[in-house]
Length: 197
Image (cartoon, rainbow, N blue to C red; front, side, top):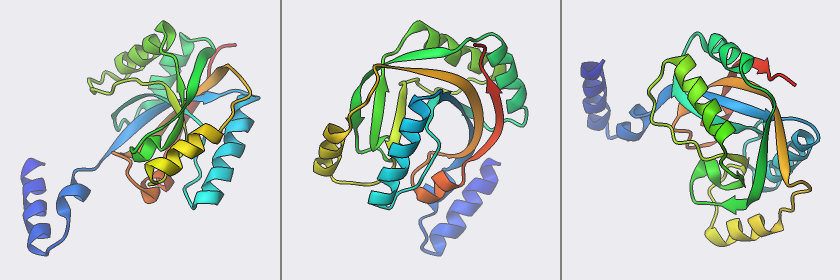
């Protein structure tokens, strides 16, 4: 595998292409918590509205709990995880912004023991040693923007709740790292499981 990568890199560089950035991407499995109503509809409307206004990709509202190796048996991982997990409630801290594509505009949640436990349950069930660091958030927009525009946008978003309940978990096949619209639009849900009420 390593030899093939080196050959690919040499060939692509010889052609004058930017092989390094494209060849460093890999396929991964992301595990998402999906918000329950009424937060789900609010986030869906907000994401669609922002995507229209800023010509950005539309995506399902979610909190990423873990990202690891691309696994064929992701359905088993979330079935095992969901069987030991009840509905998850997360406390909203604030709407934030950053220069990172996948965190252009996002809702920051407080870290708590239950979220950390869920992260560890998925890691154990997947038998994965990824170095993914859980920073609980729900993105609202993926778009390269100036810092001023991001700040103004973050200040303009008002959330009608202080806490969000998450009632299901999904496994999503994705490109890692996700860096552009094409990467986002290539995401594919491979498994879904409701959490116990």
